[in-house]
Image (tube, rainbow, N blue to C red):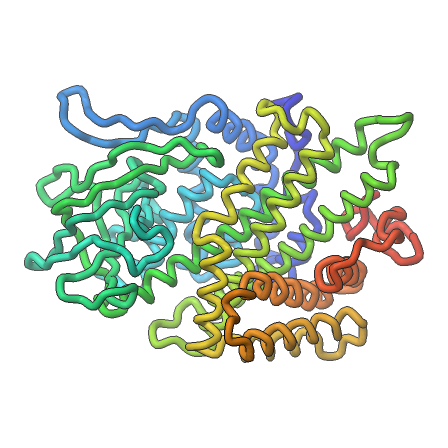
Length: 535
């Protein structure tokens, strides 16, 4: 890896003051757990970075359809390095079930921030989550997923519907204690060929049309006779991450177990999607952070026109943009994680606290994906020609970032779900209360602007007959207002960052020139390394 990435050998935790600040703020066990975070960050910059590069460039998963005896097995072949890596990373899924909360899981996922390997872990995690809450009779399978070698997957959407779950055609027919699934065509099935157990949506015979008629099922890879229970038609070639096998799965008479109550299946499905959207958010910012670090090392070492790139005002302006997006996006993501941590044990019908957590997940998932795309593209540009060469790590970070706006629902879906959470659950009322509470006692102009932005955006949506037309922009405005509010509550060192975030994303004006003067001080005073500045 030497010569391919500036991050080789780096401790990604030690280089990330924002993460340290947020963990101290949101993880009650931070002091005891910090050595674990630091050790994990060290691994990420050493052997893990090299293994991830190897998987991406030389050894992506491949589909093996038959064994030596000609039997159909439909298994994804992983490189030995990837299998060994996944075994050592599996423990990051256990925290919540061991009474340690969700923040550590997402923190380590952020430090890993590999779209493919983290995807394998999160889809395995989601199966364990659903079984833990709604199918205790499958405790043994949950233990396999968390503590042994089983992998999970979530196959919800179908070719004819895409993100429209209500368009699903998979039919579920009861057969004694089990069910059989027919007419299933799960067209973008991450973990295909790898999963030992999958969560799938299907409509019980006679259930109403639309998403409300869907139930959630546990689909094992093998039926009770030990035969293949579903078929993997093929693995797909993807523009983005290559480490997770994604393919097309056919269900025709597949045995399955009902999870919980059939009439609540859509709620369970949306819960697992909330978990995944939060993972998407922290992964997006983890990828963006890698791009930012690559660019920062680059501009300190590369000379152009007689001086370091870092010393050029326009380059410093770009670094300010990367720094501000990173701090704001990460603050938003972990605030949403903390809200979910407080509400995750609730069951339908949920309290307003859970509806708020869901509301925040839409804001975080959407805005962090946008920041990751913009940040990694800008980091590539700062590399110049090398940034667009596949053999260097920076190009991969941008390729991975391009996935984050699409997986777990693009911005159109996040916007529609946000409107539903407002109209049917009143989640926006608790959101406004939370923003107001965060900003209480703050006399900065940016605090007033953040509150005003949140109030006006929600009032406009509630009063506009064609609110859906403006919903995507409302997602950004609400997310940005919350980001400023959270940043202002992280201490004095983050006040300049909050000011800059508000200036750029709430006022929609260019960064002021003082931001490039050695730190984030309006007087041009240098900030301490790692505390908000660029020096």
